[in-house]
Image 1 (cartoon, rainbow over the protein chains, first blue to last red):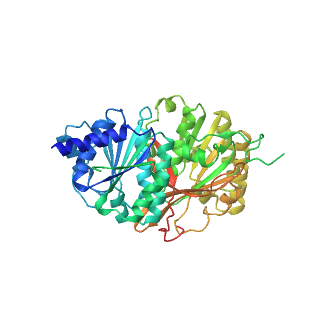
Image 2: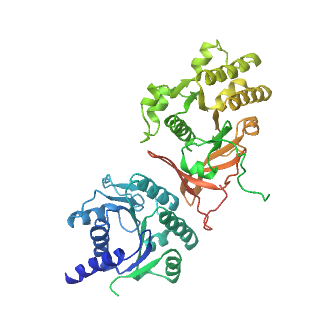
Image 3: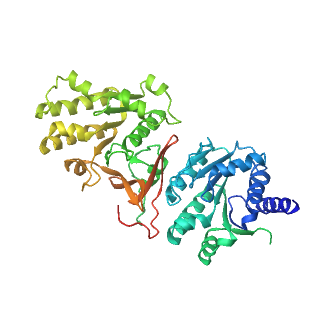
Length: 192
Length: 255
């Protein structure tokens, strides 16, 4: 339990230290996943009054929403762009805060849905979470993924939004690391 | 004097209100241009046109939608419920929807084929409505259906030239919807439409590794410099959104 507290505090503290409009690569291990989400959403985004756009290509949005409910994190300012539920042919009911993108290969549609959600809250600053670069890399080649990140991150920066890109250490390759170095202002290594 | 990208005597713009399109066009459609919006079914032509009119009406410009193929009641039932749409615009007459078949009836045009005089009468009637109602934005959806009734290329040319000249002189910016098949070369059914239009905006579907993306490309626009790149389009309740089409070496064909 002590480890959980330290991960949630660590990520919140490190994100708070960043200047506005930062793009950051968050390197973490699989067993730190839900603690990282809790720290980022509950301890960072809520305290800073940010509208959160959470792009998930790793697990369905409903799984994350269930976890947030258990952690009693309010969903009022959290929105999902879900790129996995459709390809899994999931029959689960869709949460009103979740927008479906048909496939993680439709990278332009991910950008469009992020833009749509940000436009819906023009008076609030945003935190955009990409979960994760590794799962997007399963479905897309490095060239198109680099282009996607480059355009998205620069667009979000121009809008004053924070970007956090998850990278799971177990699945990192040199190509992924290079891509993240290119687009991020900073990098956070959780638990190091 | 060194050449600059934007000269001082640049033409007045009709700011469409669709941010991405205004950005691509460096500020909007040059005022008074007649623009062909061309694409196959389900590519977003009508939604773009309606947003163009609603944004104009919100900005105080009288806007008119002339529907040829679909009764406006049915059209409005199926249109995207834009967040920014305000019923007041219709009640105040700022935004008008008219079925062209009703105009045919009023003019006594009952034959399928329009002869030379009827073609001129139709162009003059539309121009008359624009003048009388002080219309600044007009959509004709679709010009293809009107041309089907005119049939002959010479008469189509005369109709479009007459209409375009009068509307431009009145400062009315016009979108003409052109229906094409996805397999077709060119941007219009008769070929005349694209040659006479001041601008051509093409909407389409691009299949990439089994995904179907809606695209938009501005291939021609007189009176302004503009991007000719292909963009991916989304039709949302907050309006038409565009992002650049990613190349990334994964596009199998030019689409």
